[in-house]
Length: 472
Picture 1 (spheres, rainbow, N blue to C red):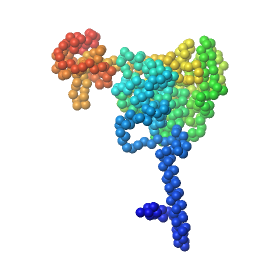
Picture 2: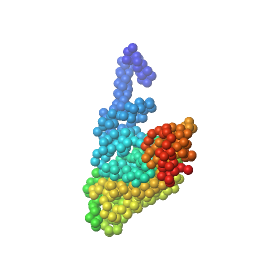
Picture 3: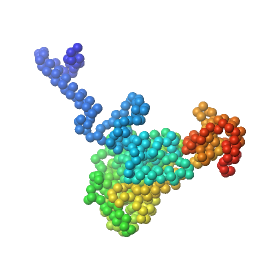
Picture 4: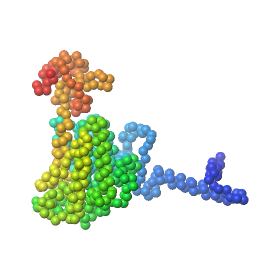
């Protein structure tokens, strides 16, 4: 079959010329074939290899396959672990961190999901979601606030799992919220950051159609943005400060105004998106019986603003404007959070400003706005005061786990771990008259000690426990 015969349908779109000039018709046909072939070729290149056309990586769309991917091949992705990039592309979150990264100075380790943890737990008591402020840029893993929070909850044997990634914003927090519920947490903490969340939320919501429902105004003029000073911020727009104690740091107010100057429509929209995200998460958290805790991490500039004022330091115009606008933005956002049902709001600004009045180094001496170990400790301590009341002490004594079939499995929970009774009769013969049913997640942090098949009340009966923990 000839090539021309295969494309006979083209004649439906090519007009015939009067006079039956065969030569002209063939020329028109040939031109049409070439033109359509060229269009199709360019389209295929643009779809499958956009880099050949010079399209920047961050402007390339990522498709979502409708086919079911092979499970293990999709989890253990060789191209991920061998990538030289720290951040990888994703169709919904736009970026994600490279998984299975070893611990380096100020970054890592990353677990199989690309989050900064040493492992992925089956069940977590607390999930922390945020950006680089929660990830803990410039600190070792042990010093970021989610890890410090876990140590503060050690008496409850609570597991804190971080699902934070640098460069994320409110949109990604919402996307990750549903995934976080699979860990069956008691609490999910969402840590917004006023330093860049508003600007990044607008950018992502208006560039990815999947997030179109978050757009407060479909006709928003995206060019109505504050002036971007550049990054790193040029020295001409840095404000070095030296406090009376000798403590020094450098502020970059013009950079932080990009997300806080509400005279611009995009900044207002950014904060509206953050409000909308909080509303959606509050509704979802209530439906699955998870306590939602919301907080806002302020900029370094706002944290030190009270000390700047108290010491009478002559501040720059941009700095004073940032402090006024950011404080107003946080106050407004906090009020909207407090109006949500079944949501706790944690105010970090007051605690950070109080600590900033001391000689503690909360932030680096340079332009970096990520908190150091001391700053992370303030954040963790303040959040822990609220989280602690939702944590449950692991049970002690006879407990039962109900299976989906309705059958009850008897266990002996001790301070050392969890024993399973082979039968209810063996539990009774060891002296147990009654116990209480618990959720499987309530004993998830207890190590399994083995199966009890013998009768030994001194070892496996109520008297084996401390008197205050015996079940009567």
